[in-house]
Amino acid sequence: MERPPDFNNKSLLMQTEKGFKSEVINIVKLTAQEKLFQIRILGSCEREKFTFLPGQFVMLELPGCGEVPISISSSPSNREFIGLCVRKAGKVTGMLHRLEPGAMVGIRGPLGTHFPMQKMVGRNILLIAGGLGIAPLRSPIYWVNEHRSEYKDITILYGVKEPGQILFDYQFEEWRKIYDLNLLTIVQNPDENWKGKVGLITELFEDISIDPEDTFAIVCGPPVMFKFICAHLADIGIPRQRMFVSLERRMHCGMGKCCRCNVGSTFTCLDGPVFDYWTVMNLKEAI
Ligand SMILES: Cc1cc2nc3c(=O)[nH]c(=O)nc-3n(C[C@H](O)[C@H](O)[C@H](O)COP(=O)(O)OP(=O)(O)OC[C@H]3O[C@@H](n4cnc5c(N)ncnc54)[C@H](O)[C@@H]3O)c2cc1C
Image (cartoon, rainbow, N blue to C red; front, top):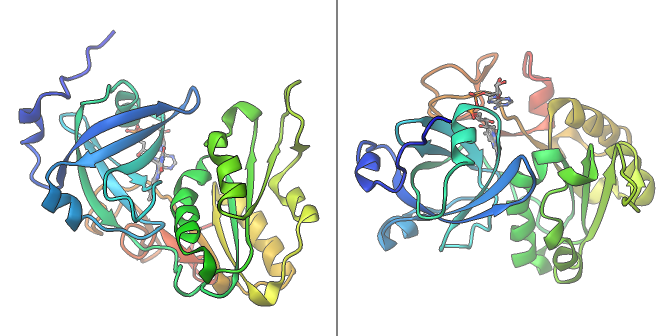
């Protein structure tokens, strides 16, 4: 098997002048494909400088291997570490999955647009995730918890293909009880141990009531999923300007220079990844 580079070697990281030098302080294996990396930016001044809002992402650099965009999956108020939930997809993410705590990485960011949490104050929020879409949703979930009195009802709908793909289920009870929110899950292909609901995520709408006049929606997941969800939300009367999605296009620089992530004339790295659905519908080739 190919030997991974020595990521504990700080001098390797010195080759990058682009971002914050950082250390992987903890790795939580979530499923066979996903791990949660807790990453600490080195230096207290640098850590203080790194502030972000829910929905933003970073470019995570593995020195000598490459850089990948990853949504921030922790609380904006957590100044100790940044949480990144990474699915093993290819070259860089595959190498990331081979890291051990103590490895040195680079963090460039925060980048991109964010969910407009201030605009949603005083309203109900519906957070909908398909599969890995729960990763970018964790940051707004932490946000609403920390500002709980500013929002009305919070509902999370989470759908996956198979029970083994559910991420962060160890936090669900805490989210339900402490955060006082309604969390419903559904799987497409149940196994013999699954006692919950079976079907597509849109079937969870049967179990909740939504006040379209007073609700904002945040939807994260594959485009095919948010297309159906947003169509349903529009049918029940939620304006498309009150639905927000994250467009995770392939991107390289994160700075609007490499032209890898364009949708028409829009750069998803600069103008997104978070867009309201009205804008997405008017972007050529977006969905
Ligand atoms: C704004 C943004 C936020 C993201 N957040 C997360 C996150 O929180 N967690 C996470 O695991 N991943 C996230 N991704 C996707 C992640 O960036 C890619 O999986 C990663 O770049 C793949 O790099 P690689 O070198 O491992 O794979 P490569 O060797 O480059 O490619 C392996 C396979 O993955 C596919 N692929 C690569 N990038 C993407 C993409 N953006 N969308 C769909 N397929 C892709 C390729 O087509 C190929 O089939 C995000 C992407 C964007 C743009």
